Image (cartoon, rainbow, N blue to C red; front, side, top):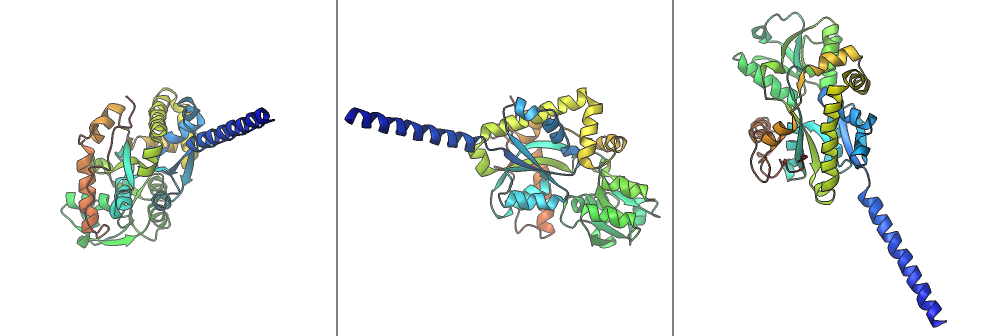
Length: 324
């Protein structure tokens, strides 16, 4: 009886241990929840999902679509997401009260996909005195200040009307405003309503950079999954290059536009290579070129009273999760 009791206790202990290990494995393998707002430069994530590239790289991922980018920012800041594809200013906003999120990947640089569309305004100089719809404090606002400065103007020379990018495009299409700063696909929709492209991010190279931000606590516990996630991103880019028709179909559907429209939008972004990512982010504690971009945006946000003080890029930008 004693031997039987010992064997029974041992069996129960082994079963309990197996259950604990199994539970731990499930927790460790819980999918990374990644927020993906609607923006042309982030659409390769949907290619990665559709073509099974996450599974190929051994990482479980749940992509969460966000029609409104600000909602993704809030979800990441509150811990509802493990990471999100966002603009540089979004990451600075989240880290304004202390380090929460790290930039681990540069997604894209806007090279025409952010735009100032106009109706009845024939030149940049003619913007003086006009009402311009723009999301105050966002990357579009930063873009507008760069454009105005290029033509010898400041915000004091125009009237800024605060609207989110989708609303700015809609207001322009409804002809309730004659100038708007927005991005694709809302820019093309505004142009179709009778407007024209006056200026674009081609006029401000290097100003608008989009990134993947991952929560710091997630990096501590799931660093390997994050590395696999980023590896899937770069394979998705290879797939887009090799299978453009199929990829554009997937990305156009995710963007809510036609394939020809998406093809035009795709021309407006420049996607950094793996080597360019390494140079921009820096590795093994070294500073990359993106540090200067983040510092420039931080100064703008402080000047606009969007941050109480500047956010130092050191420590919040790491290229160490890039594939070898």
